[in-house]
Image (cartoon, rainbow over all chains, first blue to last red; front, side):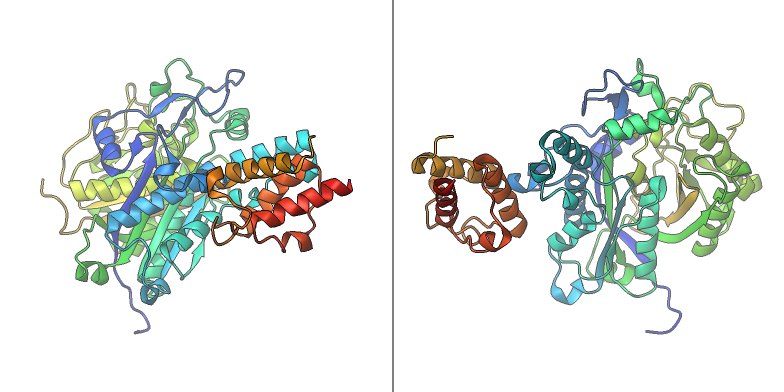
Length: 424
Length: 84
């Protein structure tokens, strides 16, 4: 292999489990129709909580992917990971278990923000009532630790290359996809399963975020609560879900006749080094991150058509991200089309960056852009085109996806249209 | 609890069915835990813990390692309960 080769990377499979639906088409239809997946919390008794809304995955039956006796031993986040991974592999047209010849050059980067929070809660309360001898499940640790997501996926699909979990809060999914992209680009692997998973809608998750006053309390109108860039936003809405992508070296994908959603062109990272929850002033960290992604992709700022914003619906992020976009794109900023799909799903935390990469890939394949819903009264400080309320069929060549995590960790991905795109 | 051998056996069978999602009629004394019921090491530990809790017996590691069949588990528990 020549020393400085940069191979091209295709997205050939998508597994998507979100509050909008299970599978690509239910999600895509809901995104384009501007539907909301947010509703009252049903996953635990939240009647005494100040926040009683979230984006829950509906009608998830894990036995569709996993034998019943194994389901009992798996936290919900692992059930999501296995289901999304299995769907992604099936979608890619690759065999469910890779041949040994391929397996050594195939890896798995799947992360999560919390991991098995429900299992932690269950084991701890069981310990409090039964004591240490019988209070803990032998499966407890294996169902809690985040890297058991790639743990299970590599066994199921025979992936023998690098496997690990990136953990960077709301940037987890983007870091997972970006690092997997690098692994293929740089020649270590030909196939990577990459993405993020989150199932944190439990007492610890909701209670914790609520105590930090980061969540919307719009309990009487759940579907209106996630309103990025709107003047009346009051915090983000927690959500759960998973997205796993199959990334493949481009020539290999073309040779086997794979359907290619989009190409990953670049990946940029940065850190604010400022505050654990507040963004750096003027979105300086986000600016450096976006510039790095554009430089990595080798494209000019004028080449970007669409940005899938981090757009959490918090007071801080939405202004800061707007400033960052203006800072990077200058005169081109007003020509950009930008949307936050968190307006529809809520904030899926560790899964968000991967879900949003998939949304970009689908937008590029289908030449259609999802909206920011609930944008009824735009914040004057958020004065860009955020595709309010209605999706748009438009030519899209290049998409940028932003993810900014608590702790000040940032990731941006650049994706491009391929010849497989469906004509307008 | 009733330490009658049949009761002990029925209860063990119930626990195994519950943990491994199998039907009672699939289970004989000679049924192999690993070969027939596909129980891996963690599943076995989990199963034994439920049995320890139910019958208030202790199954140390060296004993657990000798369990190959359902009959091995039942006789172990019956012996421990007679000794108690």
